[in-house]
Image (cartoon, rainbow, N blue to C red; front, side):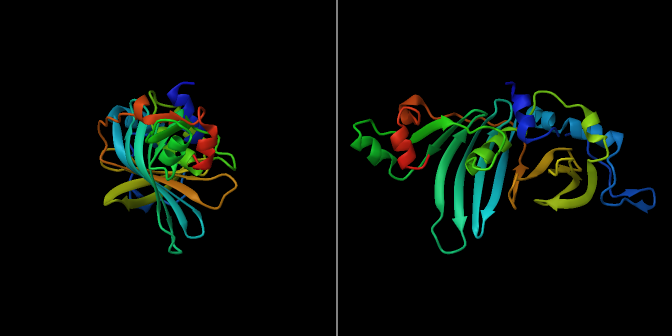
Length: 256
């Protein structure tokens, strides 16, 4: 499946010259107003603009339970659909943070800093490796899909090799949501017809934030982008990686 098609599974089309302020002449624009044809054209190019920029820093957050939040902080190469991040699960009850190093593409995930991995490999008579690699779970984010996979797919999906059809945004269900500051940058806010939200810089027309409510859940995943520009991410080599499919018992034992 082409990268653009994969992107639309979780990130239903987004992009560019977002502009319109909160006023039109002397009238204040109401929140919930339909997007204009100009804005629809801009939104249709949003993911393609990420591709053109080449990459960005990102923070993806998912407050998935009472006092528990998964946060990915790293870099994404939008042209090659490759990312790396530190994945931290934090808790408000005093439980220590759980930290992993992860790399991901649109199809695979590498997980490092896994407690017990080296010991388990040694006990089984295999060479030590720093990373376990496995395929990402199915892209539809159904209940039970690992949250780490959902976040990885969502970040990779914020890029497209081409623009989208602006007609998607002109059916009356994509609406203006005002303006706000994202990391000290003024952004125009839009709600897409499936409930996702996008924040687009009024200066530069770049995607600053994407939010998506999770199906059958009460929380929203938020991806914030910064410092758009070329990124190079080198995936872990075979000499430091073990495939989870080759060691399913060990992978299950260490929770990958």
